[in-house]
Image 1 (cartoon, rainbow, N blue to C red):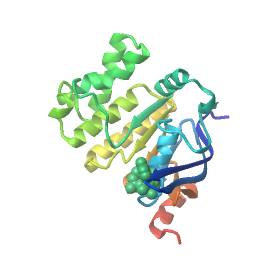
Image 2: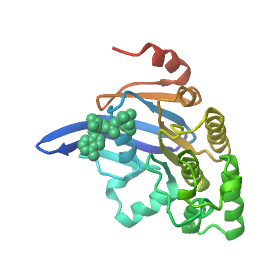
Image 3: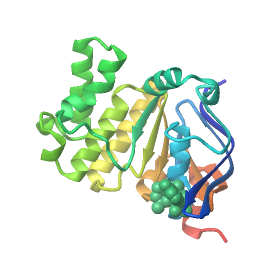
Image 4: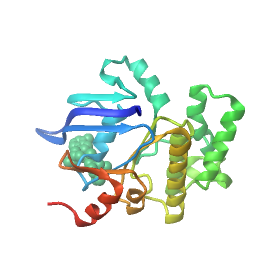
Length: 241
Ligand SMILES: Nc1ncnc2c1ncn2[C@@H]1O[C@H](COP(=O)(O)OP(=O)(O)OP(=O)(O)O)[C@@H](O)[C@H]1O
Ligand SMILES: [Mg+2]
């Protein structure tokens, strides 16, 4: 049986906005299996980013539980949780969070240094993943010497270099041209095939949706649809009342 790399059970989350409370997620449950490619789709404001934040343990749910690689995160100390996140998760979020004083190469190398990967292997992996995202000629530039799309590609390379069990990505192809997007999606498939990396990707991009295994649709903070991608394609066009 395949390992479940992420599980949320009955998760609810609200944000406080002055005197009001905005419900962002309502009783959401979801499983992502090892090597599974899952898209999160749904209208703006439906709760996709909030769900990714809950699974990434960047924020805590008001109710319900988040499991990573079959361990409940609520039972872990903050140190154990930091270790689990480092080892198991890769993040590609809209604010790329690159370290401004480090070059592209050094930014991508950083998680490998933290994980104690041997230097030679580390250098080879960093160069290889940066080449795959089309940045071989610019790997020694700092983030402020790169365009927005190039910074996004550095963030993608950094999320993948550790070969985590699960990559959480929020609109990862939003600033990329179609050739680069296809290259990133090829790399996603390769990592899945070779290393069983699973991906949970919030995206509106039809190119992304078409190459996932499964599309989960979120609306008003709830999962309203969850189906294999071939059936989901016509659904995405048809919409839902
Ligand atoms: N920090 C916050 N404070 C208050 N409300 C928030 C906050 N973050 C999100 N929300 C609200 O929670 C709901 C879900 O937001 P979320 O960012 O998860 O949506 P989304 O599906 O990612 O949308 P998009 O496609 O536009 O990125 C929305 O109503 C949003 O306005
Ligand atoms: Mg969002």
